[in-house]
Structure formats: C-alpha cells, structure tokens
Image (cartoon, rainbow, N blue to C red; front, side, top):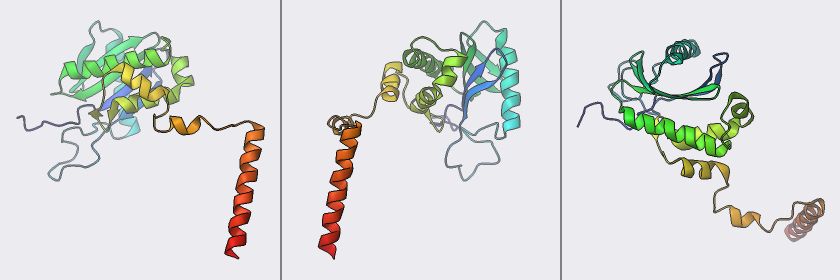
Length: 200
C-alpha cells in the first residue's frame, strides 16, 4: 500500500467562463482534520491554494494553458487537471500529482452529465448563474471535502432535483391556499387557547 494513499483525491472543482475568465463556481477542498505529522501544506488532500489571490492566479494560468489543448488531462502546477468544455464554460477537476487520472476523469464526466440532466442540455454561463443552487448541490453530491461520493450522473441529478423520500408523504395532504392557511391558523389558535386554559 502506498504511504500517501488517501480518500481525499480532489483538490478543487472549478467552473470558469471562457469569455471573460470569470469564476462561475469554484470549490477548493481540504481534509477537515489535518494529520498530526503534517508540515505546512504537505499532506494528502491539502488545499495548495489557500488564499483568494493564489486561487485566481492558478485559475487564470489554467484557463490560458487549457484554451489551446486538445487533450482532456494535463499536468499543471504539479497537479493533475482534467477538464471539459461546455459551450462557453470550462469544467475542471484538480487532483494531486500522484492521483489516478481515470478516477478524476470519471468525476468530470459525472459532473458534466449531471449538469446536462439538471439544466436540460443547456450548460452555459447564463444558465449556470440562473441555476447556481442546482450546480452547487450537484457538486456537493459528487464530492465532499475532497472525497468522491458518487459518479453516476443519474443518481446525482435525482438527489439534487427532488426532495428526500421520507419527507414526500408528509407534504401531500397539506392545503397551502389562503383558506387552508387560515384553517391552520384557527386550529393553532384554538389549541393554544385550550393549553393556556388547562395550565391556569
């Protein structure tokens, strides 16, 4: 077993606009608990870009480097970066230098396909900004603290787009019209009055 074996395989997921190099959605990850023998930022899964300035410099250089690439996997700044272009945005998954490229590539494919399902094949800057909540939840279902949770785009999209099943039956019999809300208010007022009378 390799000494640097770790579940924390993703350092960052980036969605960047190719038009103006602006960030649409970026998430940098670090493990929640730093190993006791760690020195500085030199441990598996550590965030190599802790400050906003370092992140923006990395993103700008990465976009410039990948703009003229034909492959989907590169080594940039001693990091394995896999990327996909979707209309006017670039999707990136960044991992450590010893990380498995195929695993990271599966993550980027899952992200792309889940976004296509959720946004009805319209993954562009405008749609992503309008549906920022769905895109953010999609990434959260895919990776948590740098640990890959799920790579099936259909499962990710279904978790993001509907409420949990245990809450669904409770919501079916509720009348949310004005009359229904008035009935709920009257019922609550009546029960509160009864409780107050019993207590006094």
